[in-house]
Image (tube, one colour):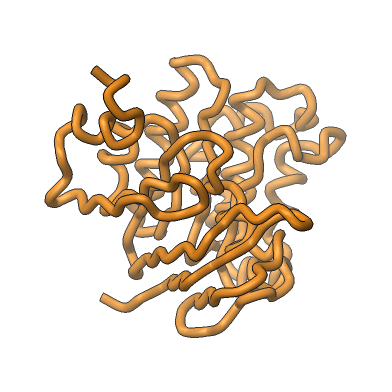
Length: 240
């Protein structure tokens, strides 16, 4: 299986405050990986650096064999590496359908955009029902569906999701997790940050535990420890 993403010795931070301390992760074509760990330990910083929203101080990011370290976010999206932003970052006065159509802006995304729009409507029927509504009138869960739908309209070769179910009701969490599972079944490679380790184990081929800006452990699904052992890794003895 060919390597799609390779992140090597990545270091990044904000101003003079370092956050990432030499992270190494990789993802093969057709694979899904999960990231988990305590809040504030670098998971979002890692995703922003991969997506070009934050420049690394050192290290290398390769996507499909091409060095994208420090590339502009627009160029990274055009290459097919797409991160779905949190739903509250949408343009609130734009309509749902208008937002989805506008998301297919790059040349590679324009090809077949109507078919992908139908696929997004199948994935998220609520978006089809609310196609004429403004984004700001949607519920939090519906805005998150729209954000993921927009990312799918970009025709991703790799889709990144940063805590897509954060703050949602159990029912909406279930709907979104089911949809994310369908995306994975379609063969779209995924990087997903979630605090629900059981969900990540069901979705992903491998997990990375990120602590203090470093990869503390890599877990292969085929040889994964049981849930209690993973909780011990995450929380220590407090998990008992």
